Structure formats: C-alpha cells, structure tokens
Image 1 (cartoon, one colour):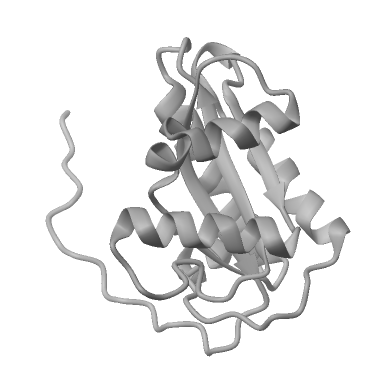
Image 2 (cartoon, one colour):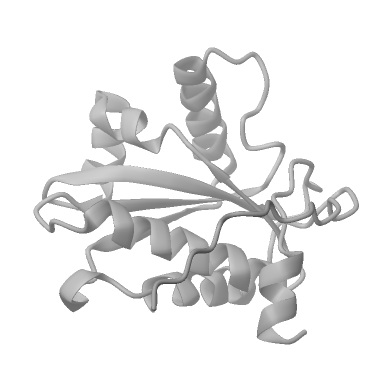
Length: 172
C-alpha cells in the first residue's frame, strides 16, 4: 500500500481474534510510535506493551469499571499498547496522541487491526495504574493518553465514510 492508501483505508477494528501477535510485529508498531513527532523533540511519550493475559484482563476489567461497561472494552484484542506521557513537558498530550496515531497507521500497514481506547488517564491516576508503573520501575509524573487494542481482525475492515465538506479553509 502507498502511504496515502494506508491513511485512507485505516479503520478502528472492534472485533479481534484471540491469536497472539508476533513480537516482531508488536515491536514494529511500537517503533513507529516512538518515532512520532514530539514538541521540541522532547519525546515525552512512553509505551507499555501488555501481552500477559492476566494483566490484560485486569486492565480490561478496570477500564470497563471506569467506563461503566459490562463488556471487554478492548474487543478481545490480545495485545494492549498503553501510551503515557511525561506531564512536565507542555506538549505531552499531543506527543502521546501522535504516538498513538503513528502506531495505528503502522498496525494497518502490517495487516493488524487496532483501535484507540480511552480511559488510560483515569486508570493511571488510580493506585491500579500507579502500581503498574511502580512494578516497571517507571518514575515521574506520567499521564495515560490512551490504549491501542492490537491484534488480528476478526471482521471485515469497516467501509470508508465520505469526508464532510467545509473542513478546509485557505487564506491568501
């Protein structure tokens, strides 16, 4: 696929096979994320790759609790990539968002399904998330930006919706 095709055909996937993703593919997705643009080159975002089934289930349960859901908010994806960013950097939210965006595009290029899932902020404000950081030896003030549910799609790629008119303006 060309870069334009990747951008135009990427869609959020909300049904995954339980098959684990090969570590090399996970690493390629993460690498795309850590090469995302960042404010003043500060590289404020970090990525936590969760492939451990029990921790994945614990995170899903916490995320569903925060969201008030009674279903798996990660749609059965076997991998969760959690993006956090250093709150001391003024552009941390943007930096983490770009990290997630790059990872979604790379996942699509590799034939993987992905979906940005919210509520990481709330997870990592609670002891639940702080304990994960502590176990990993991550110090500092990090805010959860989002999760990337990652895996092999167990559905067709959703259709490309028409683009709304009136979203581009020129001056000059």
